[in-house]
Image (cartoon, rainbow, N blue to C red):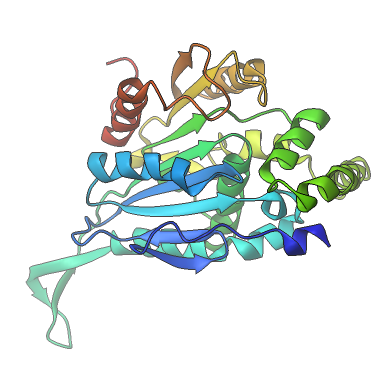
Amino acid sequence: MLLATHPTPKSPSPSFSKLGPRISLYTPPSHTTGELIILCTWLGAAQKHIDKYIAAYLTIAPNAKILLIQSDVTSVTSSYPAQHKAIIPAVEVVRSVLSDCTYTPSTNISSPTGQRITKNPQTPKILIHTFSNGGPISATALLLALHAQKSTPLPITGIIMDSGPAAGYYWKSYNAMILSLPPGPIRSAGYVFVHGILVILRASVALGRYEHPEVLVRRTLLDEEFVSGVEGGKKRRVCYLYSKADRMTDWEDVVAHKEMAREKGWDVGEIIFEGTPHCGHFVGNEDVYVGQMERMWEGRTFEQ
């Protein structure tokens, strides 16, 4: 089968620990408790492109862990139960970060074992950064699997959405999946195979077996059942980075999701880049792009 021969993403760098076929974790030498950046990349993203965002976060948040979730055709076409199973290593990372915020060292109280600890809740600082539709699909799988275990929303400082989320029109999905395949025989065979996958997915949706993936994604990412603000329900924040020149994701889809976020009470920001391609807004606009990454990480509202 085509999907069985499609290569899995390479490990991002020696400093990242590979937790699964598409999941890796960077832990800085000096890690600040509760700090985590969840980077969910687009279909078939090349490592050289991902590295630009990692490098920026190493400057913006040098003491934060970085959870990298890459996506390929298999990660967006597999069944929801399969996606749930595949994302578990990432769920364990998030749960560990949240758990670290519960108990911290103290010199005030001694435990029965002699260790001096006390309950001292720390505020987690978690940022989600997604790209295209592959990234939001990964983030949604993470949120759903985490909620199945904890039954509480994930407290976040915000979500950055680059070039998405799309509404999932057939040919847009088809083109994105084809372009994510490596050139050569695999891509040639993929023209027919991807059509088959999309037909099966839409048939399952029509029969009521599954909710349409893009509908599930666009709904879940803004649902207070799955994500919440930090510090006692602080307003949730989201920033959309997109271009009207994007040929993969219709900019109207992004705007519609932005308005949905506003209606739900989110603090919403947006940057509209001029003439930049799909998931290509960073190059040539580093100051603006990194500025928004930093703004989101610092928790500043868009009214400031």
